[in-house]
Image 1 (cartoon, helix red, strand yellow):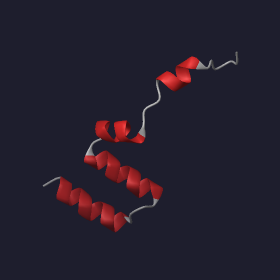
Image 2 (cartoon, one colour):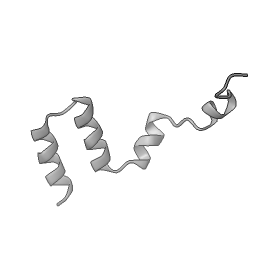
Image 3 (cartoon, one colour):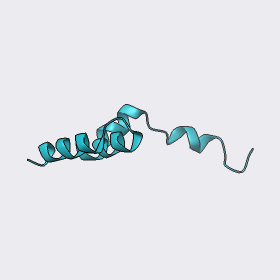
Length: 52
């Protein structure tokens, strides 16, 4: 057995869809900005719409 164990890693893993459900729309928007999927201008416009 390695230093990190083998069973705990697999039991605590969440799928992307499970993680998306626990994140707010603003959190998801920030992630898209960080990944480069949207520009800062798109981020600002969408953020303003979400906060209305």
